[in-house]
Length: 325
Image (cartoon, rainbow, N blue to C red):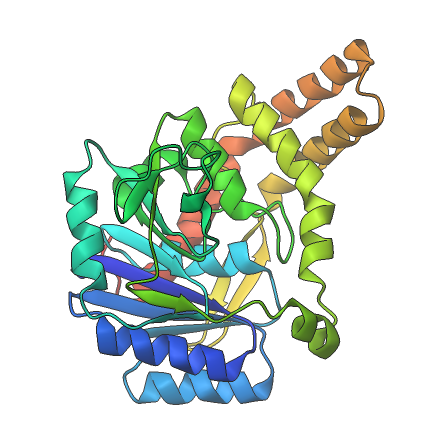
């Protein structure tokens, strides 16, 4: 079995996507699988991904019928492809050092316990509020690592689950995952990305003009919901392994059709109701307690079935593509 499952969520940006994928193949020497999940891109990007798959640059390619958002696409690759370590890699991060994985794995093995590791694409290691005591190429963070190039051992995802799909197209899923890890006392480390990879993104303006997607506005919209989930994780009212909003329906060898996770819907509605009460009536303790109780009741009633339905749906596709159980 490959030691690393690298999943690249893709929404357009064909040239950056090509560079990202080709660089992974050129500069990742240890056994790995490389998966692209296409979030309903335009034909140019679709054609590129099919060509890369045909030429062996991609091991797996799943096309979603529309843009479900980063979390859903990243979860598809995470849950369908089995490996001891999962890596989410944005399609604007180009790896240029063939020793990158050897060095990162060495630091992972030297750590006192399993941890989550992320490339410091936003220079947080220079900020003492995030990394109080950096140690050479690495630094333990008291905040959370960003999700642009993040490695998560299976032993951790078995406990903490996958990306939360509550936050729309471009939300706070990496911050949310970090808060789950903190609630479970799991360490998070940054590693200096500059010797290994280059971040070529920062395309918010073009995404807005070309596709009508305002990343910043979307993230701002869901940031308050993130604070609600943060509160619930910290107080023990919401388990870390959140069931997904969407689960696989069918796969024809190229297009993966998704459907709503029926038993998560009442949890989602109750979460939004509690969140709105918390935002608009924060000083009404009785009202907040009432809607919190409704949320906990909905979770108790539907959580296990929502998680079971998701695993059963993903397991069916894993069998179809020949993944080990």
